[in-house]
Length: 343
Image 1 (tube, rainbow, N blue to C red):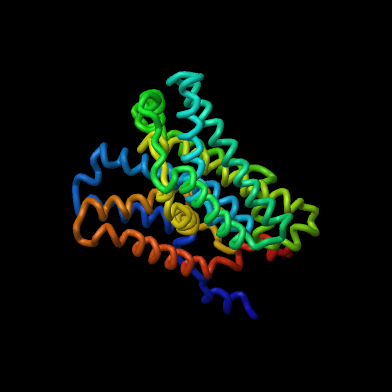
Image 2 (cartoon, rainbow, N blue to C red):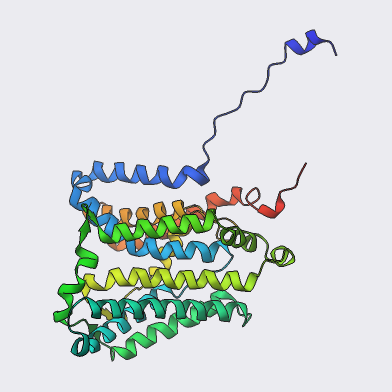
């Protein structure tokens, strides 16, 4: 074919295409904020934004841990019940320590230490039974969800465990305090998110999580210690639950069988909305952060307006989860790291 024949052939223009998987959650959050302001100008007030971000911190921190579990192909349904039993034990420990340590910082630190130890132990228990016990993660965490919820109900004798008033003054700043005008829970959330992003995207551990979630069999043949990595993801989840609990307890100063109800749904929703693949193999900490803020924003807008009852918050979240998973369907193939071949 002659050169003249080619002259009339124009190169195909690249069509501009938005990557909804990457930018979709951010675009949705911006749209929600615009909607919230349009419905009620109080939405954009400093007090409301501060409250919104503070309330996002609990679910957001837990969701960061859930990102590792889901990226590695697992699931944890016990986080809400885990938070409840950790809250109850923290209160029991601090109330018992007042006589010995007083009502100051040492007692609070003891309660925080108990929270971290319990979170690590509970996470390890879930991970160990899943990997070494060869039991499906869904079954394991469904079982521990019931166990943890029953334990806090037993400790509270069917009622409510309340933190002694004498210790609340020393503990209140953990939730109600601020640094440079930024609420402490928001700062903790930001720190956990940054550390989570580095761990997932800049370390071998993060690459191993994605490899295991993408294809566990191939990961084993690649000399990745699958059981160890998967167990560590549950330990990280437990640690994140304990951190969230530490900043949650001073908010109400109590714990009961209703503490943390549906937190597992919100954490998983935040992860999926943020773009992490429910089947594993790909995770996005940044997306998880946006997802957690989105969920809180929805509830906040429903509280500020009477267009839709805030009792339908769970229904709205359910619709968003289904929509997020549906949007992921077209992205599963090219994100499988083991499907890439060299040309």
